[in-house]
Length: 73
Picture 1 (tube, rainbow, N blue to C red):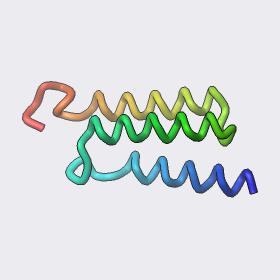
Picture 2: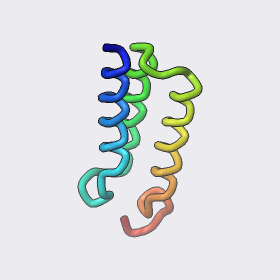
Picture 3: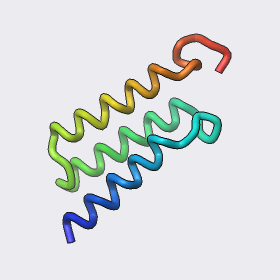
Picture 4: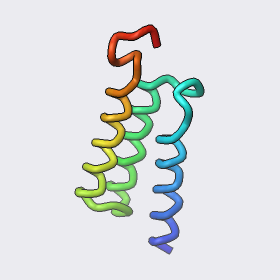
């Protein structure tokens, strides 16, 4: 049961992570990804190391957006 919950949560996180930039605001996606990672860690579905990796990935994705880099968006 726990492993199934973990898989579902990680799948949802990845789906949000891979949404095209045109379909969601970069900052909104970033904060949703952080919230999802926090929820997974709080529910003991992921370890703190896994949480850290997800947060890093979300941060890199945000930093790679043109909006964050001062571009036209």
